[in-house]
Image: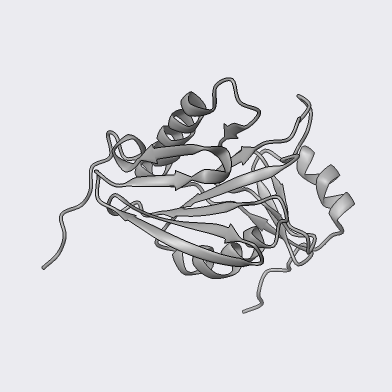
Length: 189
């Protein structure tokens, strides 16, 4: 059985090609990758977090946006994070974040390892990014990576009473708000 052909293209061609597509695609090492849909919990956590961030960012120069906005990686890859806080001045027709400061991914079982390794490294390589957060969809848990000079440190927030802190945008979000309305499967013993 033959493997399907991989669609490859340059960055410029990808940008023009994707404008004509009905579904989102990332560009990874010159290869086009179709974005998969998520679960209800995944979408709700993302929507809750965007709302919570934007309430706190009102009147400030940064805004949070969901997964329809691209982030450019210095290597030439193009990603669609679940949430991006952009502190630049994007124009209405812009296709990617002008100055991404915070990037947040809601972890999915099928991509969890990849998000915590390759994607994390890619996001950390963006000079304007100060925080990368990874959120579980199985329980109220998040890990925030924070740039400290040329190094990165992480802090975990565990449980509904915990808070995720983003000092670069002077904002904190309680996990109770991020997980509002999310029902978790019972833990197996």
